[in-house]
Amino acid sequence: MNITQKQFMDTSKAEAFAEKVGGMLDAGAAATIMSVGHRLGLFDVLAGRAPSTSTEIAAAADLAERYVREWLAAMTTAGVIEYQPDGQRYHLPAENAACLTRDAPLGNLAVYAQHIGLFGKVEDRTIRCFETGEGTTYEDYPCFHQIMAEDSGQTVTAQLFDHILPLAPGLDARLEAGIDVLDAGCGRGSALIAMAKRYPRSRFVGYDLCEDAIAHAKKAARAEGLDNVVFETRDLTGYAEPLRWDLITSFDAVHDQKDPLGLVTGLCASLRHGGVYLMQDIGGSAYLENNLDFPMATFLYTASLVHCTPVSIGQGGPGLGTMWGWETAERFLHEAGFASIERHVLPHDPMNVWFVARV
Image (cartoon, rainbow, N blue to C red):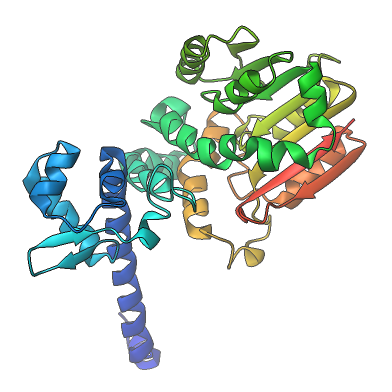
């Protein structure tokens, strides 16, 4: 530190900021170990369970007690689990379980904790991107599709019939009667499989760039005995199948593409008269100053830096990033040629934006 910095530094502010950084480090550690608990099912074991010892919890989870005990200590000091010294018992309050279990009424936030560990696994690759300007591929991210499938399962699939499809009035009846549906960037296909089960008269196709995700989707469709859904590995760069579809969906998929505007334009051209495009993406703004209070903004910008931006650049794309902004998405829809565009934010889900666009 030079003389000028020493002279003008506000010591109290510096100490307060140092304390804030310490809190960040503590929270980061808590998130990492929360991911471990989610993957091992420990929160599910603890939910609804009376205060129990580490031995009892380890036995119920079929895990090694010594490691479970240390995990419990970390979650206790993080304020997630309550500890009773008399009897050395641990308890997950119902209010905390409400956002940490696989059937959590407030949504399972522990799913997103898995990203923290993933960020660390690809740190060297991220640093290389800084140094070279190059991008990445989906294969650079271990377990990415598994994490995204869990995310999609609760934010899309679980909400599909009660909240999402009703955004387009009349769509349910058309699906009941039988129409042709494409999910562009379908991942492991959970949303498409749910619709195929619900609407046996409609015909569903899912395209995704990643072979491993498509293989998983095909296996899941076979397990359900569905004959009205097809999955195909396909690069959507330059995509257009004129007048083929009555409904096209894309869930958190457009901003990762090599040519996002080109894709949206191709999707518009691929809809029949009266067709609907249902698009979901992160609902942040294109302007940083508007995102200072956006839910989990730091997490989303980090996900953008580590994954979404380099994946796009790796394909030769513009690297729009996760926080490309609803304004950009809406502009792309207009430029693609859609006749009407509606933007929605669901009351229970402030993080995502939903567009209903018609040709």
